[in-house]
Image (tube, one colour):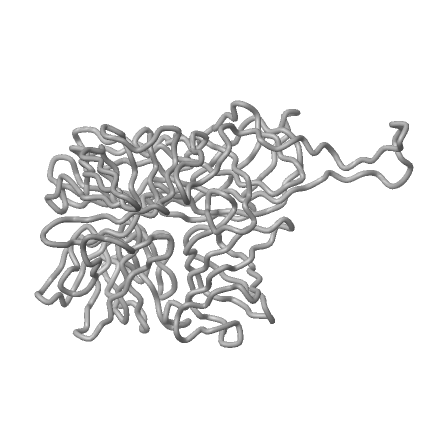
Length: 481
């Protein structure tokens, strides 16, 4: 889905521009007198403006995990000069970004008009359901791979902050033949959006649930490094910043090494204001691994297998993405929900996540207070069997499913529909479920130029529950093709 088609939909909807160029040209940094003659003084410098660069994904339904390292993103201006907007390479996992975006860079760029971008990917690690054997298969692809993304119309950066969102069409980018040979030729579109300044909405210059480890603390600010997405960032907090988790009730309790999840908004000066900082429950000696549940052992469960698509600390590395991670589940391990951005109010069923309702196909994050025991892939040294985490917490995380809408029923503040999954859906192959019941709340953010209706092709993102033998997805976001 091209993000240039996003607009404001229902209550709680999202406002994006309908074209790439929405800023007035800021021009250069020179000044003039009232008569229009150049003012005397030192040689003028180029005027700059903050830019957040983010990546998102349109689905390839047969892929379960797709990690890639982006080495460079360059913008070409109207004079043919280029600007590098990736000062450091960044790793990201694309399948968890379906129906959302994640920042990979934030910096000041010269004001002016830009005509295209070039994105260079160094390497890829992926996991998918083999179309013939239906077995989970891992593959690495070595680049570089390059996508040229034309801006039509041209993009003009003025003196206000901007958010540039790249959308990878995964279905068009990755191919597989009957012999299992995989090819990657990245196909992307791009769109510019206004920066809210007050919202953590990632399309509008924010970040939502960015997980990382605190590297330094100074007064009301802290710096954080992340394995996935933005490699490093500095955040300012104020009296409105929320600290919802026990163990971190405010900045006075924050220490280096803490693993946290941050919601933040980009400010006019290019800094981030933290709106929500949640302690993940572990420090520098622990780790977090996340992914789709592919196997469950025991009843009640004593062990999980995940197709890894996230990690932090504990030996996890970007090259671990798409490997299989084993999780040991103590009998007393707590289960929780990441409801950031998803409302569970007014549902006709009890949205429960515990040992009894844990099922294959759900996306979870597992936090461990101890390090990961090595597997055949080494301590985060690559794909394969990555190792074992002993869970100190299991948390249900938002995920996205793609399909076709039917039985669309509007009922007050809650709308329901059936999502029929594509025939090559990895989720369907893994779980046996060909449909999912979807719940659209009044505050669900709807993106697209057409409304959700029967027959629509949509990406639905939210929390996935298993209730009364049925998969039920409560959405925070819907993207309509």
